[in-house]
Structures are given as structure tokens and as C-alpha cells.
Image (cartoon, rainbow, N blue to C red; front, side):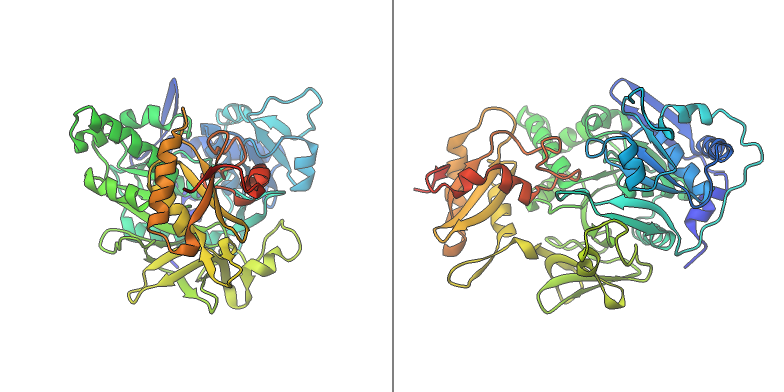
Length: 505
């Protein structure tokens, strides 16, 4: 591997003209990355004088904001580790500090009068940034040291925590750059929580390669998007589904498709990036029709970015070929397994007994739990989750993801999750679109899905959720994937009741 990108960005003040913009409803701050580097070094010096140093762990529990990334880069300069906590899933307090061994915790949550020492408002970081660095010099990292603890975004119970090595971050940054050649003039827009390590990758990339980066929040992204004029937009499939519906509405008003797309995304898009959950093929096709290129990829917290479609190597329906430094293998059970030259890690730091052994296999292989296949040219196709396979009484195995995708692709529902509570057949729980529920459209969609499905794949009942699945409601992960177990628990009475829901005619 070439010299560490992480070590370069913390020791070398940028000489390029790249900038960082933090924007949301009602405010926008743009900082040259050279000035950002100066502020981060000032924050590092201030933390060092307050007793934080190499090997310590800084917790960050906050929505996306400038102070978040200042703390993150300052921690890198200190040789300290960050632990990013997703807002809404954690509460600041002594228990969080104790459970994750935090030496300090910075949060935008209102603190009680009896907040433990070391738990501080993240706004104080802005004051640190104005202090004199006072001769502070950044530490250096080795490839096997871990810069951060990242936590699983979904599942129930306590999230699993995984420490990420410098080598894995460097490897991913170099691999992505080799495929997409981000450069001065590019402006990468990202809006998912910064607690997701990959979102911070784009800041590291900007510091190193000199492009711009804009950080906002999901709540603000559609409002700020047209004025940001990005060249690259990083988004989960649910975001692009919503954007598609918006563009279709504008087209219905008589606007040309390309003009409608530019009205939302601006006029400088080079490409769109999606992953983290299965993308709707109809949505991917739509963006091509309106003149926007969208590339789907695949990866997990445990593997980081593994495969990616990209310019010159793009196959419809696939999630791309393995990135440099990654190897994808399909095991005897059809499970996608990933080996990395520079693994994210080889075990969880925080997890229930047995979790690490189920995911991390001997020889550096990560067993993802996803079903997949590789074509003759090495393109990966994801077929579903191994735990989403339903075994019927006749021993036939049904992979439910294609059934769910067909239902979602009708456009009548936002999401679909399929269960098999009895030998009578499959039951779908669907998330309606916001607004009045169109029962007739859902019935028509059910008939259309069953018409193209094999007999054993047909849905006999549809449970319409009381309200759309949301992250805040606990039924979607922060990357907008349905949480199957939570949905089953919420609607178990109706799933098990053979008379509940919309029945097939």
C-alpha cells in the first residue's frame, strides 16, 4: 500500500482549494479545507491540554454539524479513537460512558444538571477551534491500529460494535479513488449520519484529493440539494426512490425529464452513488432515462465497500465487481463471503457471545449472511438474506426478497416484508406511502405480483401497516432498510390471524 492517507491528511495542511460546506434548513457554512485543518489542529491541541491523548476514546452523539467532523479529525491527530453514536438510538449519560469506555463524550442533546463529568455540549468544540494549537504535533498511525468504533445500524438490542483499522480505511479510499477519480471541481454531497464511518470517508477524500464536500442531514437534503449543485450524491435507495417520485411529479406537470431532474439535483451531476440496501431496478432504470448515471454497490460494516459498479464496468442488476484489495467467494450454501487485503477487523469489540465467530471465519473470511451469485465476469448479484429464506411444508425454499421487490416495484407501497406464519401461504406486511392509503391500488398490486410468481411464492394476505415504516418508529435502520424482526413483532397479531388484512380473491 502507498503511504497512509490517514497519516497524510492529519500531518499535511491542504494546499489545494477544496472546501467543506455544512448546510441545513436556514443556515450554510463553507470553510476552506486548509482552514478546517487549522481548526481541527486547534481542537486537538485544546483536547490535549484537557488530558485527552493517544489511546483515549472520544464519544460523539450528535446530528451532523461542523463540530462533529472537527472532533473526528482532531481525534485522528491525537491518536485517539472516536465512537460515533447515532442520535435517537443512544442517550448521553454515565451508563453510555461506562459501557463503551469513553474518556469524553460530546453531544448536542440537552444535558441534565447532574450530567457526569466528561459529558459535554458539542458546541464547546467551536470554542476549542479558536484556541492556539500551542505547538501541538499530530500522532502517526500504523495500519493495524483502529481509529473508530462503528456500530451496526439495524437489529434489536444493543448494537454490535466494530473497531475499524487504518489499513482498511486507506485501502477503501484508494480503491474508490481508482474507480471514480474524484478531483478538484467535484462536490460530493452526503447526508447520512456521520456516526456511519463511510460518511466520513468523503471528508478524508476531500482533504487528500482536493475536491469539495457538502454535509447536510436527511431532514434537510431535499431543501438544500438544488442550491448545492453537487457533482456526486451519495444516497441510500430509499432516498433515490423519494427523489424519483418528486421528479415524476414535475414531469407530469409538463417539464422535460432532464430539466425536471436538474431542477432537483442541480445541473452538475457526474454520477449518483447508492448501496447499503437493495435498490429498486425500476428506480435505477428511471435515472438513466432522465440522463443521470447511478451506480449501485455492496458492502457491510464488517467488510466496508466490497463491490461497485463504476464507469467502464457496469452491469445492470448486479452490485458490481470486487474492488481492488477485495475477494468475493460464494460458499457451498450460496452465502457471499468476503476476504480483504486489509480487513476492517477480525472480531467485534462489543457483541453477544458467538456473534464474532458467526461473522468472522478462519483465514480472514467474512461470512456476510447474504445470498448471492457471481457471473462469469465476476459481477456480484445479491439474491437475499440467508435468514430470509422460508422453508415450506413441501420442503421448497422461498427466497423472499424477489417477492418483496416485485411488490415494491408496483409503486403501490413503499416497502414490503414477507412472512410465512402457517402452511396456508405467504403474508406480506406493507408500508404505505404517506397520505391516504389506496387500498384498491394495493389489491391491484397484489394481483399483479401473484400473476408473475410461482404458486408457492404467491401472497395470500396483505397487512397494511398503520403508518409508513420510519427510522424514528423503529422499523427502518438508519440506512432505511426494513427491520424484519421488529416489523414481525409489531404486527404479529395480524400476521397470525388468518382473517386479518387484505385477502387474495
